[in-house]
Image (cartoon, rainbow, N blue to C red):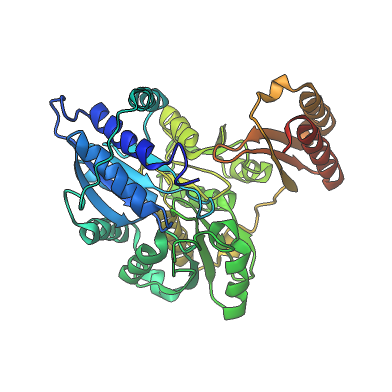
Length: 440
């Protein structure tokens, strides 16, 4: 939670100082320039200010991009010669939470080894217990509007299509970072859009809206009889959709739609798509019919990108709506995904539902179990036994994925099967075993 360790003022200040040292500040020979962006949470402003103070104390120069999306900061870091880009956001989490994401000068998230190196300095500074937090009056380099506009202009020039003005959409901004950016971008692209949940107050980010609740925009699409619904999460690095019939369209369907279009114009390198262990078996089958290979990476856009870089794939993503077009971007970008989907629909003259109509989704259930610790699953006999029983019963007609959330104290149990009865039975059995072993 923001305000508490490890996101209290002293620790945030030290994070800034340690990052600047790593980048070559104070005693280093490099001139360090860092761009900072933030989402709309109540705590984001003071965290950004405190982080700025820590960076400046170690000799870094800081530019504020203000309230912008996570992928906007990644773009600015790699195109404007910044040493790093920092985002203050907890993505899809509630307003009370917050976090700090760091991108390198190339626009990619830092490698695990680099993060560990910075963490070691953070802990070393905290142990000295001699930290004096000195707050600056303002960022070293003002220019919030200019930086945000650069990202909006780049996106509009990269993806905009003349057919956009034929489509009418409803866009749910989750009261988050996209609230202003999306409106300006869609104006530049001449998209006829109605915007909802675009009035952030610091505490309403992700609240019963956005990508966490795509059914909300889906209902609006039907009620207002528009072509499509789009919804973002708090930092807009992912997007989900709704077709004209009010059906929610997730990241799997977007991957299928994008893969077909990219293959048609020769842009799908290796004829390969990288998805995750959570992507539905139906996506794999649909891609195979198109002569497209699907690889699975662990859950997390970072791991999807690693697999893309390893294999040379140009398209990858997650069921949750993180989609990476590596020819254009270094990270998942909800706004780019929205424009890409609109582009395919506009060019084809078909509806979103028609374009993905042959995606036959296997029944899938996900059960979340709150846990008190994240013990390795293979070390919990009761859970391991329940997983083995499910895999033996389902064989080639289903999948079992049990993993811990990367951001919350949760274990996610996902079962996919041709038989709904078997699916529900095994999901209950595994979740029950986890609850008994580690449940809160």
